Image (cartoon, rainbow, N blue to C red; front, side):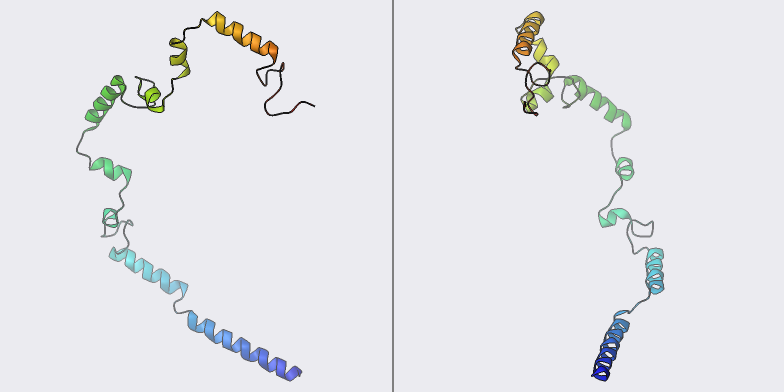
Length: 147
């Protein structure tokens, strides 16, 4: 019985060992040498060989800027004009960001408010005393239930 198990184990190991030897067609050194040859020949795009990176659909931002047909001064002046006109969202100039989002900034909302500062302060103080403002220590907190 022990002889049969030992024979079976040896035959299984031999079978898997032979399969592993066949599966390894190239060594690491062979693959590295093949890659180095392809790189020297320029067959790998974007590595500085003969094939340019844009042939593979790649282009760095520096290359994109170098191929632009507008000068830096022209870009700066057009951007400054658009910013002054308020056409660039998120710069704080013009009404584009507020109108685009359907919201006004706190500064713009305060500028167009019809209540005075004293009236707002009085309303806030009353709400604070009544405990309607969470997190101020006078009323309940929105996150922590009272015990």
